Amino acid sequence: MGKLILCAGKIADKPFVFPLSGTKVYSIEELCCYIYNNIYEITADMFDETLVAWLRDEAGMKVIAGKLETMIAIGSSLKDIVISIMCSCDYYTENEIKTLLSILNDIENLPYHGRQKQKADMNLKYGRYAQARKEYDKILTGGSFLKLTPEEYGNILHNRSIACFYTGAYREALMGFKDAYSRNGNKESLKHYLFALLINNQIAEFDREVQALGLTEEYIEELKSSVSAAYAHAGGTQEYAEVEKMRKYSTDSEALIFASGKLREWKNRFREGNV
Image 1: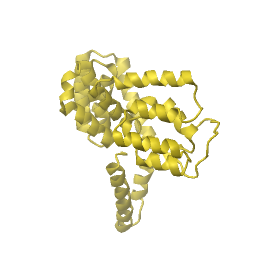
Image 2: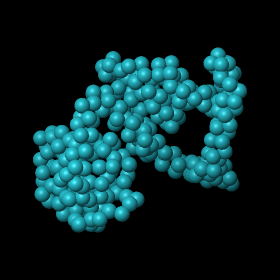
Image 3: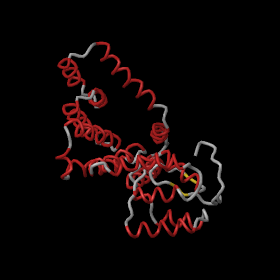
Image 4: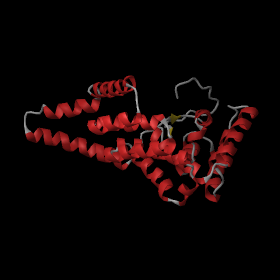
């Protein structure tokens, strides 16, 4: 977990793995520590039969495992489930748990679209771009979008466009950033839109836009330099090396075998929402 945690409880042989972040925990103390420090990422669907089984069979916490199983069955709130787990060991003080309770109350009082966006943002943060895109679409196509301010709508479009970019929908991402900026007026959305124009090699459109917006030559050069630096960095990545490796195969059949393997790998990542 990246820090020293004093564990009084049993250390599990097999870890519990948080589905979004992939973080592994080996004790009830590590579980509580992760929840406490990532409370805005915690969603009710993280608490399921997998966690119940781990608490019972691996962490030796049969009482809390049974309690959690009942709470899941009756549909207890996220707040009640989290506090029950946090109180199952003495890792955090009463005041610290009260602070956490206050945060949970704030989360619980978020409007429905706020909780939806939280879930989508977490998928985006951890690289589950296909799933993030689906979650943003639920907000933008459901009744919730009517309650959004122009800025909130634009911010969701911005994040959705990032997900589109990483799933290969470059044109859709480009138009999304442009629409986002027209709604939220956020300079970051504008920058992403201009980046997308350069990456899509729409130089004439880029020139028209920067002229219409009255952007300085210094800002324009900074944008172009950033894109050049990104291309240079991409040239040193593992993915680029794999493509270059395919080009160097001596026969078409060898290249085809290699490419087929990579396609299977990428398809599996896409189905899992990890692209």
